[in-house]
Amino acid sequence: MTGGNESCTAGPTSMSYLTCLTYILEEWTGVEHIGDYLSYAFYILWLLFPLVVVFVLPGVIIILFYVSILLLHIYKRKNELKEAYSHDVWVGAREMLATLWDGHGRIWHGYELHGVENIPPGPGLVVFYHGATPVDFIYFSARLHIMKKRRCRVVADHFVFRLPG
Image 1 (cartoon, rainbow, N blue to C red):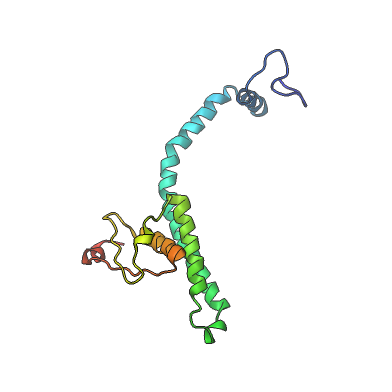
Image 2: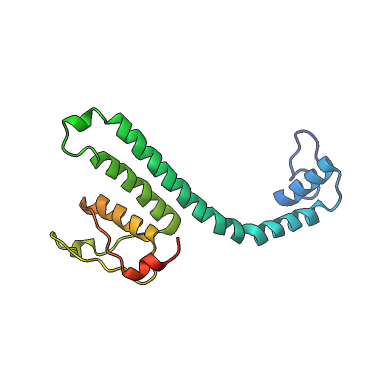
């Protein structure tokens, strides 16, 4: 096989780097036919990957909720003195959380907001489609706050309160 400074392409026959890596792993571990074991490991990873994705998404959302709460608590403690003479101390907190949730929505879900220019300057009504979840509203309000510096209130149907969770 290859010596100390020799490469995989040295010698009478050149081989691919993956084949060379397989030969090196066989020598190093002492296991023959390590390619079969590696293909089995990749098969198990491929098989379990959807389960990992299913459990990672809710975990990331829960972690972001806790990070939001922690950041708001730190922001409140940091700005207690400003609260005495400032009109609205929570403007910076809204900006920080809107940026956090907008980044999560864009990276994880590819969330975009189109047609914001059609929202009137005064009050308006935004109707979600039937599949909207609370996280969708968080993404919407964060993006709206970043683009228009406006806040959005929620109106829910009576049926929403019958849903579990």
